[in-house]
Image (cartoon, rainbow, N blue to C red; front, side):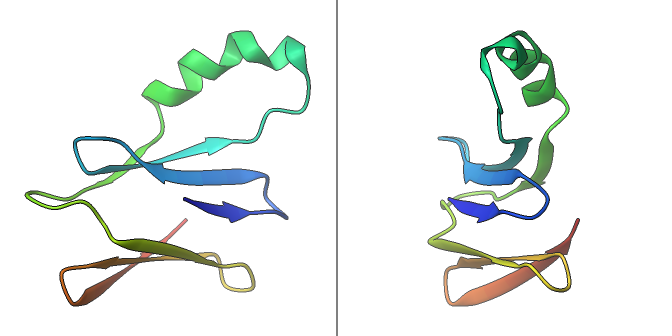
Length: 76
């Protein structure tokens, strides 16, 4: 899991190896919007293995994903 605090974003990996990006919820009223945001959140998909680590570059808005001795970079 990785967090971009300034943009209020959370990045995480599901069991299929898909990296998801969702906004952080601020109050209970936003809970209804949560399910609709999840369907629009898919950013990356990794085949066989789960990513081992994720890190957010807050200054340049990059997401670094480490998997199997490789680091992938995604811009958001």
